[in-house]
Picture 1 (cartoon, rainbow, N blue to C red):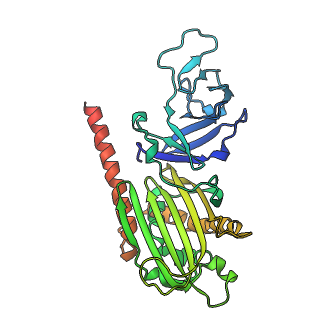
Picture 2 (picture 1 turned 90 degrees about the vertical axis):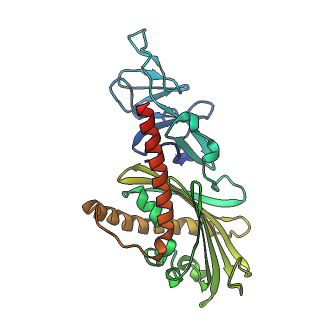
Picture 3 (picture 1 turned 180 degrees about the horizontal axis):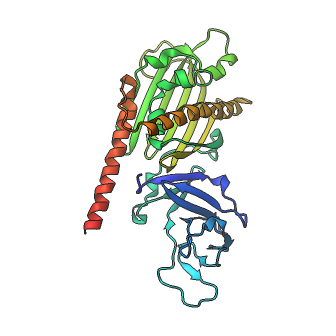
Length: 350
């Protein structure tokens, strides 16, 4: 998995100042423990004591530091051991790996690679629940599938018509729509317009029977696997190209960070909500309810797919027209993986 990248470790509200508030995570194959210092700053270090590999998430916070509760070794926020009960001398190598941490848009981000390269400007754009212009609600779940499957799933929204027939679906126009894909240095932008179609299934009951709308799905995906969707719904207009000339009915953002735990599972941190200008009583609650249901629909499909892929990893699949998005983003992922592998090899040889 990519190392010199920011990975989401969860929502900021999950990590309080409580004396027992330790958050254990597994990110890109590494076990991590997070906690807040008394000043509110977040510390992330390997969840592994350098004495006998005890999980530090079973430890105790003491000021800025974290004490292992197996034999009492105490580590500062930089990961260096600062106390060994019963022994005055502290070996120089007695330390735990620490990781750069940034809080942004109500997400906690951890840099898993070389700390010197940890540039906060590389964190993806998002709209968090703290943004006053939006009414955003958050949630999360675990999916037992490989993160490459999530990349393919999210960069190809044609599956909406089938996997999400009773939630995000409502029209078969997804089968013939032509999305505009733009490859970026660290991700993929995709714009999809559906014009003169029924509204998505979960809001159809809010309109008179037969109502048609225009919908714009403006998606920014960044590696390793972040999905930011700006969905706007308009009354059906007359334009066949460019922006809709219908009335804006609903303006929403759904921000999703999918963090690979290992080869077989991901943690999915997601949100959805409407702009204050287009929100109405119960609307953001509805968005929050339906996205939870829809992601269980994805979970069922992806977990079953993952099992089949493990059974026959060399099975030759067949691509079709809607695989353009997944093909571009997975190509970019593999490009960065090869670059990191080559860089690591050169360091070892040097």
